[in-house]
Image (cartoon, rainbow, N blue to C red; front, side, top):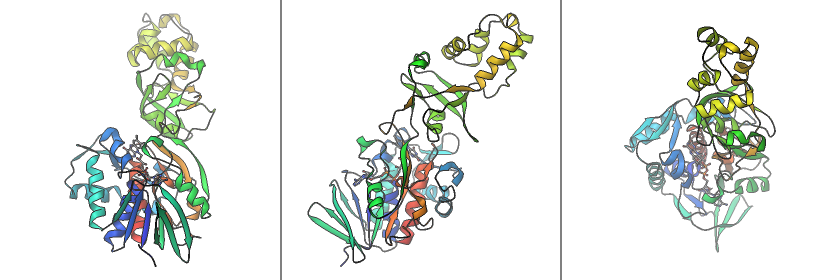
Length: 390
Ligand code: FDA
């Protein structure tokens, strides 16, 4: 005998959305989390204001082994759908930049919205206790919490990825998925600051300096701020590119994305008596200009520098190859790239093809969004898709 129609593991963004949608469709749902309160990552997201979606959401802003997988769910539950829900609750919001929508007030409002939606669906919550065991037999999934065993014909894995373990994040979903025969794409920290090695110590002394740059990874480009830290490189541009980065490969940074490679030759013709350092200090933060010039090894008045040297300097500033020594890892990563392989899941329902009744949603799945509200939109959309199917 089943106690519930579905058991959802993980009361984060995706789990709460899924449980509330299924509950409001009349399903009896148990929502389980080992922490004592739901939505902990939502609370700290977006600097406490939760960047809850992005109006430019599209599948090409997500990393996945199958770039088409996210299309169905994102197409059926859109940013506009979540905005309508936020508006229904009277939560004030604004667009900050690049289509990113934030609460005017607090991320708590989004957690309260999801809790209310779960309450409307009559969702039962089991919080603050570890999951002791999970089993499957006779068409039922069994989840033991303490001494109590709960049974349901459907089990939803919504326990996210291992980023920020101090908030209760684990790789639990991967373990359970593997146990039920699903493959897991090698997970790694993403949207994470880079560390620089001793050879780049010069740049670590720039801690606190930021610049508007363009970073590239093959055809993907991000024009956002880069921030130098005492350990290496951060800021939106660097976090974005970290999701693509492979160890020991260079990241090409264009420090002057609005200028041509020959711009210093034009400057030379116009003001030959001005020092190169001064010209660069007018378009970049001075400390950064000094550090870059020290590496380039050119100095003096523009008129005294050959065209070749100025062209080379312009080319280097447009294509500066940082080779990070690593990243700050899961402790600082906003998300995890990789996860439960989409090949084993239905893109329409998120159900495992070979294990009926098992679903995986949210960050636990091998779908990872860019910085800027894309990850929550995936959590809402995949949670909604599974919630409709339960
Ligand atoms: P999520 O991590 O939200 O929830 C998983 C739940 O499972 C948690 O409640 C956890 O306690 C529980 N759990 C884990 N292991 C368990 C176990 N073994 N047993 C029981 N329960 C378990 N995204 C975005 O779009 N906009 C933003 O502004 C931000 N900002 C941001 C800031 C910071 C600091 C971080 C770390 C992350 C973001 N993100 C973000 C990313 C976003 O938070 C993330 O992608 C979603 O929360 C993923 O939603 P899920 O529901 O899949 O996992």
